[in-house]
Length: 98
Image (tube, rainbow, N blue to C red; front, side, top):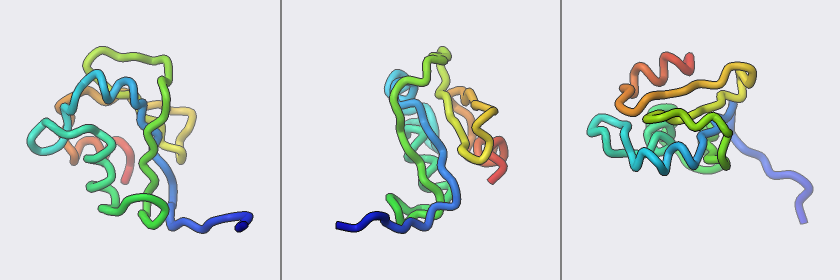
């Protein structure tokens, strides 16, 4: 059994799964995609450990904003982001500094 597995991640974005499910989409160019899917495509296009950026859906982060999703960029764990539904992909990547 391997004691470690390599990945290409240069960082990770944690997405509150509960917030995302409540919105039932709300992001992307058509406004119908979940934020995690939009981020995967915008930041790398990859999935899993071979992606450049890890997008990980996590349990409830206990912020629970109405009409928005809570994100944590592991490069800045002290600044949690609240992203309102309808935020454009460009604005989202700018807010993340990517």
